[in-house]
Length: 269
Image (cartoon, rainbow, N blue to C red):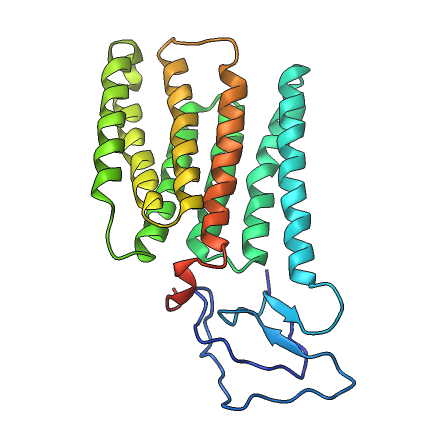
């Protein structure tokens, strides 16, 4: 994907560089005054050329685009739920496979950093594999996504919350210990994945509230899946898995692209 070419007349004045910028940030002390007949165009905070904000009365094309991708994400989520209700496997696979790419595009249009987009696209791979009953490859893809999330959140903070570390470590260890006798050959993979998932939740909890909520929901979703793998199931489990996963990924992504995101103050990758 290529960034749009910016209009000839721009005012560049953001105090910080965005995490995706690869060119030095332009800075002019007084800026460049726009013609009276031409709507003023400014780069959004962070200077990302995908986040152009118009000073005129027209709608912001980037905001409109991100809303469109958000609608696509939730539309896929609804289609996936319908696929479960109607036993439509094709609808389930297609809609689930399209969810995370839609969220990745929303995040990209909002100026999200590369690790976030990577985490969402790797999650899309995991979703597609899991829908095809390919458990182990799916776990590998999700594990890679959690690695991206953990790196992303660690870059945006000075330290990790000890309280969150203690809570998630105890909870993860307790869950694995409870399921251990019934996991069989999945014991090692589930324990490893639980550690990677907990790393995402712990680092997200110290980042901001939305990311913390997203991490907690992601943990809840995968805990339900782990229970299913160990033979512990109940009637509404599948619905709860879909709901917590869909909301969790959305909150993780939104926590990063929120206006108060501390990642907007980082240097480029």
